Image (cartoon, rainbow, N blue to C red; front, side):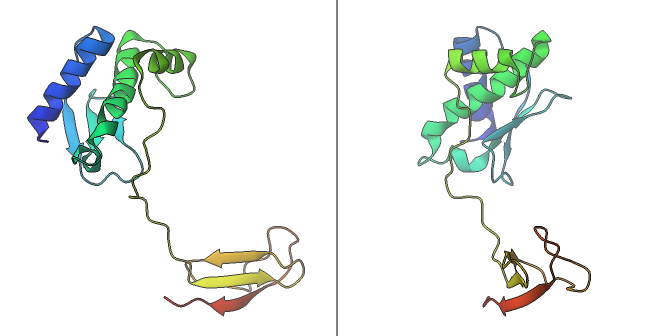
Length: 153
């Protein structure tokens, strides 16, 4: 899907679901990993995660667009546009937008390289980076930490 096609889709969903025009700009963002889209308060643009524009994940796209349009329209009306606001939650359920972006396997878990253990209570601490053991203590009991093992890469 190209940028003009996305713009036309958002404008069409805005008119059919909200009965209001979308006058902002639609942008495709290739760098998004954990979110389906973003709405910007300053210039009223909506960014959509490019990974949701593929044929395999396109069924999630209307829900994501409706979610961002709820932010857009409520912000322009001067009503509660944040996730915690009642106006946002009510309008999102009315139009059938998705509350969360579905996990399609984009977020990568960081590999842990070091495993530390508390000498007193046995609490373990997996870490990506090496720690200065003279500087840090156990968060649970304030005991001394020791390197249990260096995990393979």
